[in-house]
Length: 558
Ligand SMILES: Cc1cc2nc3c(=O)[nH]c(=O)nc-3n(C[C@H](O)[C@H](O)[C@H](O)COP(=O)(O)OP(=O)(O)OC[C@H]3O[C@@H](n4cnc5c(N)ncnc54)[C@H](O)[C@@H]3O)c2cc1C
Ligand SMILES: *[C@@H]1O[C@H](CO)[C@@H](O)[C@H](O)[C@H]1NC(C)=O
Ligand SMILES: *[C@@H]1O[C@H](CO)[C@@H](O)[C@H](O)[C@H]1NC(C)=O
Ligand SMILES: *[C@@H]1O[C@H](CO)[C@@H](O)[C@H](O)[C@H]1NC(C)=O
Ligand SMILES: *[C@@H]1O[C@H](CO)[C@@H](O)[C@H](O)[C@H]1NC(C)=O
Image (cartoon, rainbow, N blue to C red):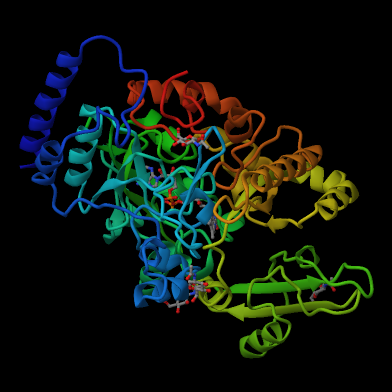
């Protein structure tokens, strides 16, 4: 059955290519252009899919055209900053700014939550139509269609991307969110691996989110290396892993990319392939850190599992502000190393709540006088219990409008120039997130084994900064000013790096040289693999491998 439909897809594809003749078109076809497929064409696509086609709209759509006081609109206001709720809405980004679109003439297409009188809800960067993929076959049909009509393709999972890579004005979307299968293996042997030495593993469908993965793996009595966010909203088998994947467990078990055994992928040529160290090994290297939305559509990822081990949380909150001034979010410092354990978790939670800290560690809102220190450790039976304590009930991180930027702090710099590092971090105007998600076991893994920037292997932490960037509620001049501040702060951060290395998944659109910052010496090989697996550039995302060949909107070749 699958084979038959594949054959069918190939026949259609080769016909399309023959008919078109000549080199690939310079521009992709966008919604409302004359090249856009007809209703009949969409009907034909529909007949091949397991689910109805999607017609994504910006979240506040029901609040317009007299709907401002409706129950639907009230519901939206109530949930607007909940990550799990937002992820269930097809095609929209977690950060509002990426749902808007700024034209070259500085006009903004947008749909703010609170409309002014007479305002209309505009589509912005939300793709107008898409496929609700429930199987690899749905993905194959969608890819075939996108290729046949030369559409601007958008792969969208949870919408957490910090560069808006899962949005695309006038694009055609593949929504991977409903690929939710979770399958455990007692002894997983990657396809074509010689011998039969397997390891305990789990296969996660591309739409599984960390909360779902953690819950299932914990019930199995195991640990998995994964990302951290309030309510575990980030995708466990999409952009996170393709961009590298850092975790609080990284110093113990390595990065996400160090824990993958195998991917299943629908490639640009429409084939459903297995990708591991033996099968498609070059693609296996590239998918581990080369970036989402670039090499193919991943339909599942198989990860190694680790034993369940006890975890100690160490909480240090220092107040560094001048006496009499209000603490800012730079005042919180949170390293994580195990230590003597005397404090009950219940008491600690209460203490942190009293300090206003369970909210989100790093914001010491109520630590009042300079030098006051909270230094507490707490025992947890497992990573899951720690995660649940800190993040399952934490405050929202999404539904706001921000851009961010990052740099990797090398162990060498941190040890040899600590004062300069501290001074630089404290001089940043809006504080800094200090993510202790590198070093230890991750530094002992061969940097050449994956496409992840080799600077990660020398790092002890990722530092990240942010600026509010809100094209929906502020004028374009304010947006540009905030972006300029972000660029200036990035430049400041750069004084404590030697190679401008940044995290592809937590980065800015405004890097001076994104190829250098995201991949360093790995870029040329990544570009070769991109050309091999996606010769017609079906997959293009902002600051992704090969994106330098496209214009600012990623619609036309330069
Ligand atoms: C609140 C928050 C917390 C975070 N915490 C962490 C963390 O702890 N560790 C960490 O490393 N990162 C973290 N991140 C960054 C996160 O890794 C990226 O935002 C990541 O891109 C999210 O991937 P996604 O699939 O969930 O999101 P999406 O925005 O849907 O997708 C991201 C990118 O991947 C592509 N993509 C998605 N699915 C597929 C697929 N199946 N096949 C091919 N391409 C695909 C998309 O096209 C897009 O380019 C966090 C981000 C946020 C907003
Ligand atoms: C986290 O999930 C719970 C349960 O779904 C929900 O009530 C809560 O509002 C969520 N929190 C955030 C910040 O999204
Ligand atoms: C800006 O450009 C867009 C898209 O081309 C167009 O629709 C809009 O009318 C323009 N606005 C102004 C003020 O020129
Ligand atoms: C829409 O509703 C909100 C919240 O009830 C209110 O503050 C706002 O003024 C309303 N806007 C309009 C245009 O009616
Ligand atoms: C925090 O507590 C640990 C264990 O009691 C101790 O070793 C460490 O020095 C303390 N740190 C600070 C900054 O007081």
